[in-house]
Length: 473
Image (cartoon, rainbow, N blue to C red; front, side, top):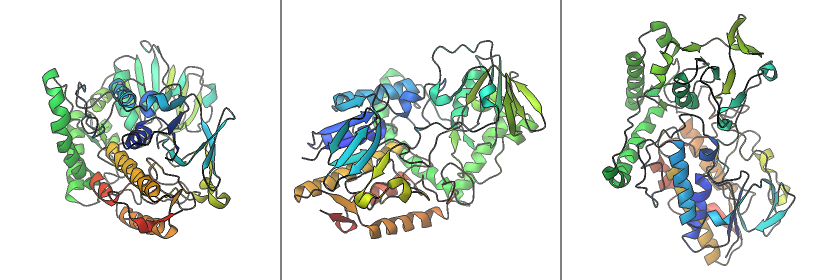
């Protein structure tokens, strides 16, 4: 049986490990750079951190949970669920914590993996599952080092931070800010939100589950929200009825929640819905209407001791600086040098944007299989269903390889090109084309992050193993 190495320990890594373990593959090892399992749900502990996909759907289909206490789970509950699954499936004891993979090289028969400790390991199959939202980004702003007070990214939130009498500046107004600002607004003396681009925000149909309903919710709500996710994804088709409805709902939500015309104007997007991530919140707009919260739309000129200075020299005093500025989503596998057949360098091959057949397989890199790879992120619905589909396809490929007595599998260049052509053709008519977002590569402009649709179409495309798409050694 092949030796399987997995980089990471978030949802993608656990999906792959559990899939192989449940089908009889026992030699599985995971490398995790942190000191505990959990991926983004371990790292993001900021106030208000929660999922914007309903809990019964943001969970593995083969591991429904009766412990969700609300429809949209918060960070501690999601992390508890994920670690519980890892324990039950036998993933936890197979995980080595506190080590980073810095390189991996295909030797012609196996992958030699180099750790930051200087040690090496050897596996037959390598699965990077490091995610697209794992490396925080802090923008380069003049004078940032001179601020003087606490300054940090939301994914590195300090423990025991007391904000009761603090003036807090939040840079960024997207998905994280929508969750953290309402919490800060009720604890901090003053909150100043620096917004570059407003977002479309749906009301959030959240609810606390009574104990008697929780087991029922795990089964009954999943198919409902799966179908709703498919409908929601259609907002990404410009001019579609779903897009028109989505814009109408979000702008009505804004109008009902924000009565001040100037503030409402500042919070109204001027781009097609779906171009940037669509958000969910019931308390963000009310928080911005509080007397201790200001929204600043002027550009930031510099940071100086105890203040942020915007265009025109306006000084905004602050004691604490919070960067809600997202993640490096385009540098797939950043910090890990992957060397394939004939000394091919994966980062060089991806210089104009990452790409992979099915978002999983890269020609020239045998037995390398990506979890949450290029063009598998979603503009709506649950990423967990995508991760399950990818894990299943990997296992089917290895089943076939082992059954045939083979040692390596590799996508053909023709299959990868056809896949990429199809995906990019669909993306060319989506809301993401022609607008600036973290879904696009900064140099080539390729949309490298997202899948052009809902989860049903991807699950269908990955359901069977097309033998002709691969070479088998």
